[in-house]
Length: 474
Image (cartoon, rainbow, N blue to C red; front, side):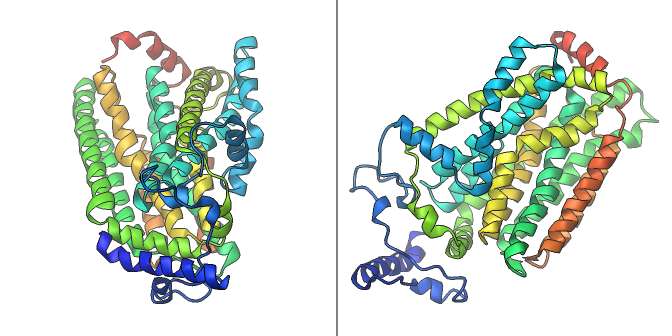
């Protein structure tokens, strides 16, 4: 795909040369002929602060992600990470003092379950934000599509860690609710906030059908596939014995999990290899519309080493905090009459994808709706096609009875939400009203989940019994 991009690169070099000679911003030829209006086209400015290094020194790093430094510089590292990537993400950094407080309370007052849960819940926000920010810095150093895949993957690291910790404690009901809750939170709440953020600065925000068609189609396919074990279970529950139906649904769930992982691999190959040129063109258009592009270009950036260090530290903190968080679920459910479905469907998903949501909303605010939708749909698809089946496959390897038989309420809300969002994405336009309606639907589901009781045979007592018998699980 290098040949089609060369005219743009040539025009960019000519623009930079002319910019140096005239000291005026120059609009690239491709931007003038791409159908964008004058207001949508962002001038290209010469920024010597972040010029690419000499050939051979670090040629794999994209110039826009070049920091101009090497190695690890502690003071510079702290300064850059504190300023973060956006105003929304910057707010998360004010919660860093809660992180040591959560560790201290966990070991000083181990019986204060609500306090530990609350502190760990808040402490997860800056740690998850650090994962997202480091991933964002790393993605600047590669091409657009690879960058989006990196950010989406690292945005789901928190979710994967939480799922694995929950699996370790045999909290299957919470995991099942958290899988669907994560999809609903990203698809309704995050997308709604993106539409609202974009609609606050302009009457309508347009986005490409390249992003929405493949994403919404895959999302509906994933929703139907996830519903298959549940429908099978409910249809034959009155005909087959409990042992027989459980055995069959477990086998079906494992096969569906494998099929979903294959679907995700095909989707990644489609996006990153065979059709990446289409996505590159869409993302380049979004970059031209970025109102903060000049400011972002001038910002100091992390080195590759600092990105890796930030990821290692933040993921380690996320793992410990996830353990603290999950350990408090059973006591809180038992002592305060909060159901496992509400804990998994609403509370856990809100914190696990905080960084991803903030990134998407910030991009929508900057008129980069295609980037925002890539994060929303990418994170949703990753939960449905990779993270959810990954839990089933890992449980299979650990001889644990983890299936994809969800509560009818949960799976019904998922299918209805997919249909609702697909209808909003159909015209490739958005406004704040559509965003408001998405948020309203999510809040209605949250209220219903709060009053939803624990399934028979589940809850804190069953969870603790499962933990004690983990070594003999099926």
